[in-house]
Image (tube, rainbow, N blue to C red; front, side, top):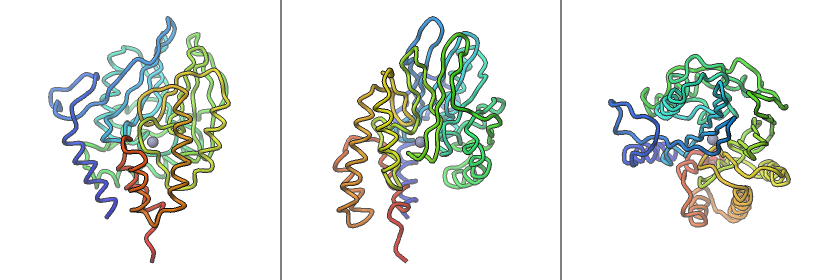
Length: 301
Ligand SMILES: [Zn+2]
């Protein structure tokens, strides 16, 4: 029931949301909300762009690292229309997408891309790759049954290359890849551009959106504390929400503290949700709470 309610809210908000976005529009689908794209930082050697889906679909992000000769893309959107926006934007840049990274195993970061990017080479951590191979077809079937084939990509592009931690120089630009365990996801890939002070954190960080928290806050808190100790980065690209600064780490830690406090006193899922919405009336993605509440507060037999 709660899942149905969340779905209803999602569909309702999709049909009423304002049309936004700088990605080129197609004449036949002018009526839908669009993802917004912004240039985060630019030097003579590299430009980083961020696309953010509308808040009605949880502000899921994708990032484009534009080198002199090629593009790397990080994460492929939840729903097909926003992956189409991403595709239109990358096409407009006029350089080939030579690597497409998927940061972690959750479907909101890969399910949308298959129809828009059928031919890209997809990189992911080995465990993430195995999870998507197993879970991806089920996710397509599940979400297509809920939202239909226009919203859900019907083609799955599986990762074929393993991503690894380490340093690499691409077209003269230094990149650092690192892996993190047991925070929002079981494991995830982060990509840093030290010369630009950019840290592509994906779902380690949320900005202006409720965090996905069906389980313990412990591992996530540990990962955020580790990130706080890492100096040299000033711009953080999150998995949900607009690019932001270091303050986001403290805001996410405070959110985890609030969740723990509410969990100690909440009488059940409904009370937890009410208290959390009261504590954070301005955050987007409230429908995420409806989706994870049955996991956090399973119905008693
Ligand atoms: Zn996510």
